[in-house]
Length: 532
Image 1: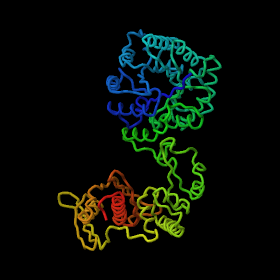
Image 2 (image 1 turned 120 degrees about the vertical axis):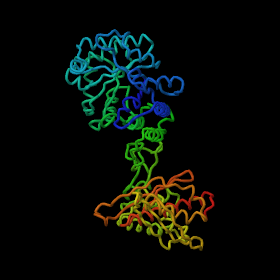
Image 3 (image 1 turned 60 degrees about the vertical axis):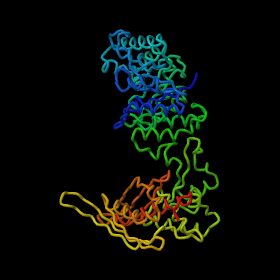
Image 4 (image 1 turned 30 degrees about the vertical axis):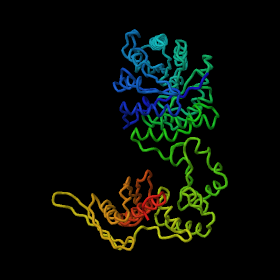
């Protein structure tokens, strides 16, 4: 039986606190999921949620899916109501999707206390709705809500729910760990118990896991190893409470660890791009430490790791990063040894293998600076400038020399707070004095420096301050604390990050700003710009 990868980012994933998709957002996410190669995309609950109804209407003309089948989600008919008279069942048909997913109670306690109906009527509701939708030409999946808890409470009734759904024509019966409380061994035990009681082939079962025990992905893999051939998840694990099983980790584990080609050829390497694009649409910062797709998923810090990686990258990488669209990174920290510095420099296009003295100098300098609070983990541009300054025959890399700067902050009578900065520098033999205002001292200093340099370096107009982060270093206290500043700059089709450290936040910012402009001008020169 064909393995099915079923994504529910647009329905279950959208229940994450603080996450709201517009219809346009949902269409964009669906296209990205199709790029990933999932087999099914659950688009929402038509008839119950107006936005979802509109999504399915627009999807009919605006979505051209290459890999995925669109699925409408809903519930079985209401108790005591004929299925053909149920408006939400009609909404499922009106969505005109090839497939439909139905949620059904699989725990007797929920049937009696939440639905407030009888065990027999719940089974009839499942039977009637599935058979009706199948007769209308729809492929039907049944999600057994609270299935694991229900089986552990009353295995006979949960078994009857599964048998009823499949006998009525459901393509798969999905065991849902709705409360997210299961562990892998418990998942395996329930699946094996259900199969033993019914004789149902495990291939006709599916798995939907919430992440309340941080075991959602592990539980899903355990279900597959028990024979299940339908898995559900959400992009980046989005969902209610701690979330759902992360669809990216699921498919990567299945394909790379279990050797199951669950995605079309060439799709696995789209994972990082799709993950980050969906995070942008959701307005949620990507998790840098997320398995497989996080920016730190293949980042190495310890010098011992780097020494081994220099010999063979797979000695400390569990898979080749490029197979999921990621890349290996070497972090430069106080833990870095010569191998880390050499590998990181090579990553930045600077080969220190033939310069052992320079390599030793840079390694020692990094350790000294890190001891004073500097950090180059997220500041590749500052690290590259440091390496370049130590290379044999290196010319001065700064585009100017500082004579002095001054920053004033004025609180005016009307309540406005304005900062003014004056810089005095020498650039290409000329003494330049420039003054500018800003909404804060750092902004004013940045503007004044740009004014002073702009006549000699007009390409500075392309550089924009994209992000500014300030951190008080551990072990520092009060107003005399040591401050670390990270500045992210964008321009000329790329972005770069620089760092500055000092007890004075303005001076720390100055170091980071100077590095940012120096690096940007140097890159412009290297790539054929006008900077000297």
